[in-house]
Length: 71
Image (cartoon, rainbow, N blue to C red; front, side, top):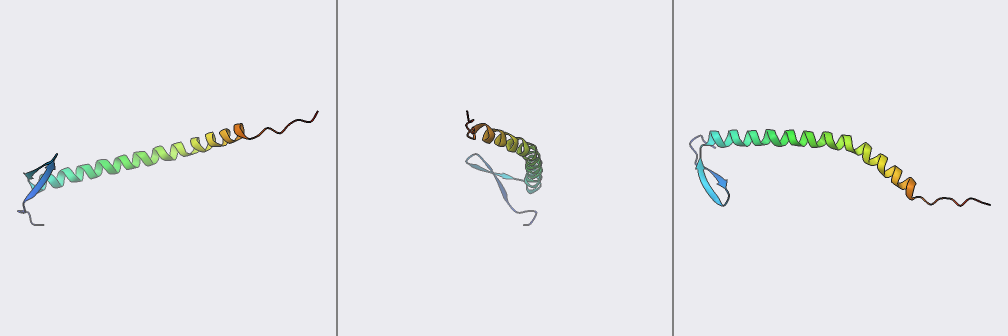
């Protein structure tokens, strides 16, 4: 795309004419933010998986039928 191409930015239901350099900078910033959020969520998932597995194991043990004791 050429530098003098007409670029429009969606703001709600309106399209507003904008500078390509500003739009490019905004999109790069948004991409960086989303990548950071994805990394943070991935780390949270890694931390939570072992906790969930432990809780699942405990729950299964608690719900397993107790063998009747013989008198």
